[in-house]
Length: 209
Image (cartoon, rainbow, N blue to C red):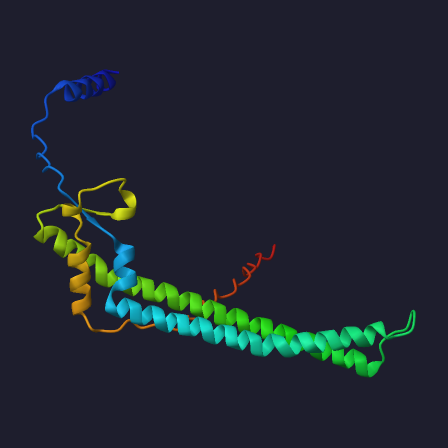
């Protein structure tokens, strides 16, 4: 009981006592505004990467047309053949094989196109990540050089003085780097398979005497 009272008293004194160390005063906020989207769409290497990604999208559309056009033609021909069957008639072996081949080709085309879409999506994300990794340190550099201690994207502001906009300075530094962005993301590593759990070994019972 005495220990509980002592601990409670000490806690009350700790709350009532003034702080020994005073927290350091924070500096006044000096804010710079930057338009990251404008930089990402206008810097020299950004534009080049975007054009290459657009070319990948165009190639996908061309491949999609190559795959779907004959499938559509074959699907219409098969439907015509099915409609020509007598009432209650069933497709013969040749037509059944044709239908199965069509379905297989349709599934293969869908699988290929899905894989191409995923590759393009990963390439886009990879390029965006490279742009961000190159841009953000430059934003910090320009922010410090202009005497600001906070950088805010223009999309987060309602209004601002053009004098605090450092977009042009960051864009100029981005254009000084002539290293192109890689528009082909690294291949995805297969997920590591978790080893199957081993069944617990049964312990032998000691034989009774």
